[in-house]
Image 1 (spheres, rainbow, N blue to C red):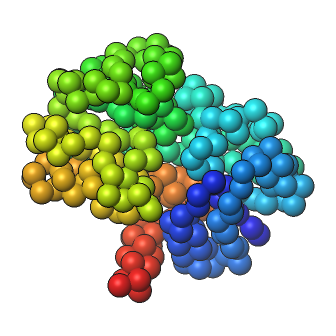
Image 2 (image 1 turned 90 degrees about the vertical axis):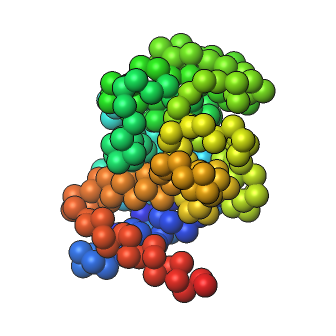
Length: 266
């Protein structure tokens, strides 16, 4: 059985954790990362070739919705899909980013009194905003490089909006980066300055490559409680694995696989 990921710039995380999971549970399955710039035909190939599962990455999480047969109710509310399951030629879209975001926020432990600034307007931002509201957080501001998209998201999720150029004027205690700024190979960049984050209480980044982005490094150096993209990725991948296989995968199996991969690279 074959599962794949579709992205314009695929990383190795999915192949590492899913293939380790298949070995652990004794399935003769394989997971392959694929590059595409033709989403429509790629999704048709998933159906035609009988590919069991498909992970959707930036920048396709919103656009993919229109090519699917069914959408899970949570993914429909969010308006973004990151996981597709193929059941006898019928493609159903799910959102496990929401699960990853929710579990990461639980570990970070901000309180209801805290004010959040969410950077980004894509599918990941939608998942995070849905998770925030699901957990009962109400003080939320959104900022994105596309102000029109940021305003639409703010209206959808009953949040405030601020322009990208004014993002560092926001009086928040929690920062969540849901943009690709700082992702490999552009690792020297950060969505905000170190000066800005020095007064924050929590910082969360969704980027898992590298595990320590410039934003996370700055937060650590300032002793600000933080959550890196690997944490969210592990939770969402475990939920994906369950959707694809019907089996529960221990988190430690995934963590060990990622750890071993990076040890070999050193």
